[in-house]
Length: 453
Image 1: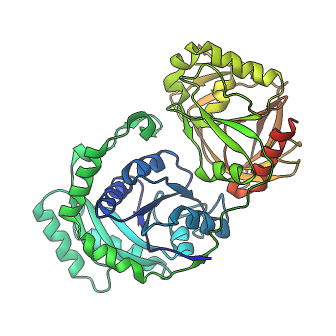
Image 2: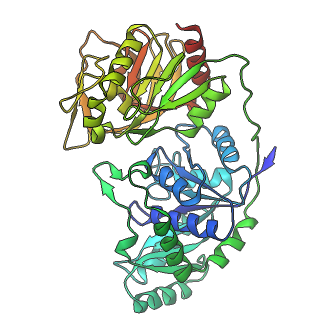
Image 3: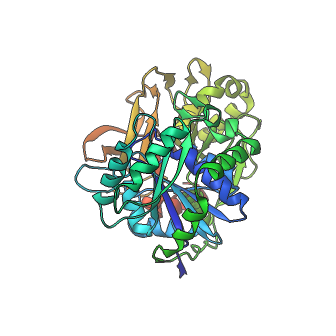
């Protein structure tokens, strides 16, 4: 058993308030002070964790109260914060926004409660002054179970604006301290694209950007006041012992490059704990699959942005097609599913599934998903339940003769069209599953690969 390290959860009243920029600035500033910082992200996001890792030199993990239960979240936090001095957790949406309107399930507030983390509230103050204090009062008193490290006002327009904000907070008794007022700085914004921020794999900002973020934070925020207040947070014991590895396993190739970079670190670790030897390859650059593999894991990402380069790698596409034809177990999620289709916006792909991926101008799907397996397969026997999420702007019209092995529901239980496409030993889906929702699925996949059926 180990004790939880001091932790701060960066939250806001709503999305778009500046949580990501502030989190990156905190990670960079604390790292520059010599602290070993463990980064985390609430929710199923893949892009923010990549930027976290670039800012502090340590992998970032997702903490999700809907996909995983409390015990699993605590264990994931313990493994991710081992040997660190402090944990910084970036929240999702508004502090109390989650799976429903009547409780905090799936919210940043729930994660803060489970971990005993203090909340650092960031308020977008660009169109308000004294009202920011009223907003802070409402948020800090809404749930008395939460503890607050302080408040930071973001996008402050001028020194005069900052002075009014400080007066407002000083006039309200019982508010957490206003730790700083961050001025607007367009040069400190991360680039965006149609699906959100540009991934760190595609366009990492670089050390100079992180140093400028740290300078910006140090100039305008009382970081010395923030960090000392954290250790008073309750320390909760977690079981952080590594999962035992199997004596025998399988050699599984994992696609990882700029086009395929959406993986939960915990999914990969659960595969390794089940005995898998993971070998990484690039569908963009490698002309063949790794040697002597027993299975393939094709994760998500942005293959549509690299479709021409993928299409030009005809030897790798042929190798994928041949691997599927000879019965190699292949598990593909979202971008990986698109790679196995006939084409992406007209660019030829592997052709394992008889469907073409077409990019849409509007988002096709977004939300949590619960999967119930309707047939025995790579991830377990029929009846197995897992949780994940779906987010994509593409669609694939899969013909009816392709088997569906997922009964799919939204988080509220609403039934969706069956999914989980299977051809032979190939399983493809738009759903990104978190193996932490049902760890036995990772072991089942490894055993399936090892046995070859």
